[in-house]
Image (tube, rainbow, N blue to C red; front, top):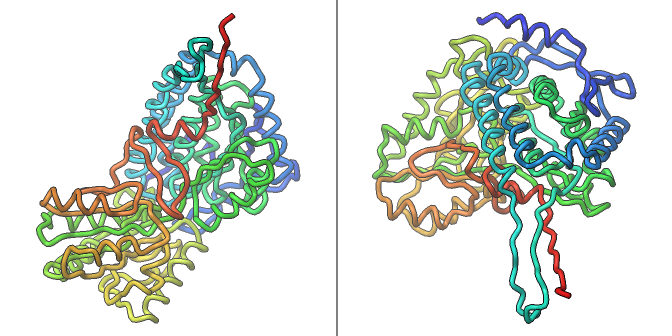
Amino acid sequence: MNALSHKTVEFIVQPKQMLIDGRWEHAVSGKTFPVLNPATGEVIAHAAEGDKADIDKAVKAARRALENKAWTGMTPSDRGKLVWRIGNLILKYADELAELEALDNGKPLTVAKAADVALSADMFHYMAGWATKLEGRTIPISSSKGQFHSYTRLEPVGVVGQIIPWNFPLLMAAWKLAPALTTGCTIVLKVAEETPLSALRLGEILLEAGVPDGVVNIVTGFGETAGAALAAHPDVDKVAFTGSTDVGRLIVQASAGNLKKVSLELGGKSPNIILKDADLDIAIPGAANAIFFNHGQCCNAGSRLYVEQAIFDEVAEGVAGIANKIKLGNGLDPQTEMGPLVSNIQLDRVSGYLESGYSQGAKAICGGKKRDGAGYFVEPTVLINANQQMKVVQEEIFGPVVVAMPFKTVNENLIQQANDTIYGLAAGVWTQDISKAHQIANQLKAGTVWINCYNIFDAALPFGGYKQSGWGREMGEAVLKNYIETKAVTIKYS
């Protein structure tokens, strides 16, 4: 197993405070909570337990920063350079950040560096370019008869509350912070209590990059206290949340007091469809990657695998064969291919869904249980003998569990089954018939459809869901709408 670097050890042993108004502070209550290594269940650090009082301090700091010329007077070019500098610093500290993700979240170190850290830096670099391109328009209005000049201005929405999950701690912070900074907002970021470490290290990076005091505030604490207080705070103009659909509903309710704007990136139960003409040398490992990447703890995981009857056994056995070879272990071990689930709560959740599947008649052809010993490990699992009514087919498991089901022909019934869920986040289609690929993609109710690939992300690509998978989009030009107000100005000629 890799030993932690000196810098990572030094960071972990320091008391973990919150970033408020450019300073590191303990919780007003003085409380802390333990941060656990999910591979061992051992305590690795203690974080400040922020609550309503700390959220209030952070929001006030963000409001002051929104009225401070150090931020509002910054030119778009300088703001873009600042955001770009953050991306550069993430790459500079890539090894350290990857170690924190592997330690705190449990994911393999190689994956954390290649995916989480690299994509986080890319998000800041991509968004930096938009700072100088947020342009209004001149609009010819028909009722004016030449007497008026009308134009629009794009302005920051204001103080933004952002709440992120534990499955991609650094990357989700980047997805939220980069566009909000680019548009000139100020931010209170509430990080997941399970995985606060990389976001706190990112806070140090933001200060090193030169982000003015109060522009970004980072609060650690629990959803029921700190998160709820942020969503309900009357001086927050907008809340952006990534997490479960159930909590998303609570966010909407909490935001109703001052009618703050809301964007939500929520759950999924994504269908992954393999036709009999697909290249199985690509489709089978692709289907395995769709569900087993990040231990299945992905909102877009391809957790419902629909396979044409003629090739069902070959595909199911192929995915199971890959699952059986995946090496589970500590994320810091270079041999590890899949780490633990993030917490004991998540372990119980996934185990409960497996028991539910078995009780309703599903059968595991590989894996199917939690691993004995320390840590929160579940074996990668392929379930068969399932139907559309089972909980394992309808509900988000958020673990390395895929349900494989055969279909006879590509017809309306397949599309109905694929769309038969409250979610609509992502989907996959595997076929060598480009016409069928487009036809199926057009009918799927999903914000992202991958064809002959899966889990392809880019800072330029919008990501978000239909139905109860959320409101709005992350990444790409589309995310800027989450953080912008459009002002129309009309001047009468004298």
